[in-house]
Image (cartoon, rainbow, N blue to C red; front, side):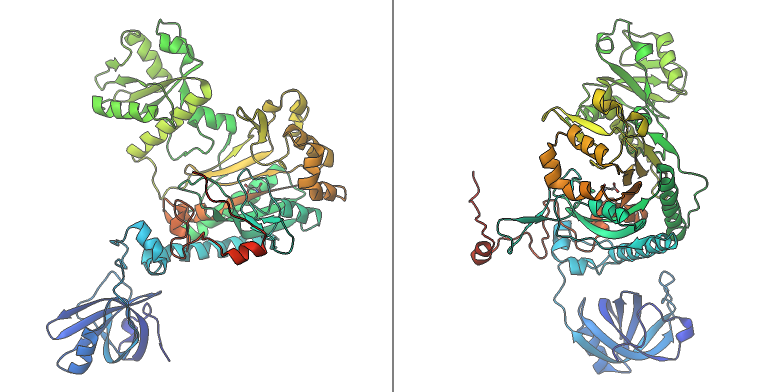
Length: 585
Ligand code: ASP
């Protein structure tokens, strides 16, 4: 028997019993005639003691045990004189009578501690060592607990877990597909699912009116910090529902998770914002509402006073940063540089300091006197000591820049407490998005999303004005989930494909199976998918979803441990009839 107990379970009540423990050597210390070893396994750390006076041979043996050796130790549990209050086993230690090396270890390339000396790339290369660190282990345990709770909650609401295939045909979620060549079907490829979207709709048509799956999805997208080429969704679909039904069930899921996992009771319904409100107040369709600092339009107040920069633009708006009137020139310059970054795109920034003594100082004093500035501060509800930051330009770009500036200020002022969870629904998204480059509309969500019934007539006249029956759930500025009520009428779906620029043949070729299914009694249905990695990262308080994925890919989509993707031998390529062209310079 390798072990009678784990390294996390012995305590003062165990004193006197003989035990066997197995695990890894976390660290060892020689103190005079004694050697102490911290033995670690998944469950905790237990101190082993070896005494030179009572058993010199054993003590010598213990001194040779290096970090990360796998050992088995047998001995008696004793009360410690020098207790460690920080760990559950800190009251006891094992007086070792026998120790055996189960496997030696080379010196690990970084320390297996929460505060490790290993950089990210090195840790990813040796991810199996990185995974030994408590901080990562706790994330994976949390992930497991959350998955269990999701199953419990959805199971209790009659959802059933149904698997859908991985080798499929393209699903239009807006990214590129990962492709898998088919050996048996010469020249043909499977696509890995960007989501189970079409399958879950087919399940509704098949009568399985509540489906869910915790499922891998694959999207070949450019890298961003909160993205991985393969990621996990809690994917759900329901039949015979309206938007309100879906919002209720899934608000319930998040409340259940907050309560069971974080012990947070969320009173009342989640706030709801329309897409337009979100953009106008927060400059963002996934607003972080843990803090205010909302954007307000100033155009009416500031135009027509001879300041050409404001007079010549579509929109002027500002935010009020509480208690920042004492910002130095340097701090204001840094903010100006921030909004001028190409990804943010503002041309410049105007500030107004509402000093604590009631006076004003602004970067536009030449054009606006105190009386005028007082109107601005009044409109933005500023108090003495506050600072107004104002941007101008085209409406959507300026709102976006103000949104980024608001988040930057929120960060600098530490307004986003990680232990606070501020969920909300964002509703009434536009159905379509115009793309200037290709001069066509794209589905903002995906092509199966239904327009709001009262907007259907606008599809022909003014497609850009059509709102969708779609919703996103946002927590602390992270879009954790999104979905929609679907189109279940064949003709409306056909029309939608047409608006999106598909010919009848293209629509038939790609989605004929779904359009056909709509002929055989498709019930009204809708659903949602949550980004499970993001949700876990948020609950764990981690910035990156990589911290909650056992084997993530790096910034370039590589797994540096197994060294993938990799080239394929010529024989295999031949079997697949694939020829690799040498890369053009
Ligand atoms: N399939 C959608 C997505 O992955 C979610 C949904 O509409 O249910 O974003």
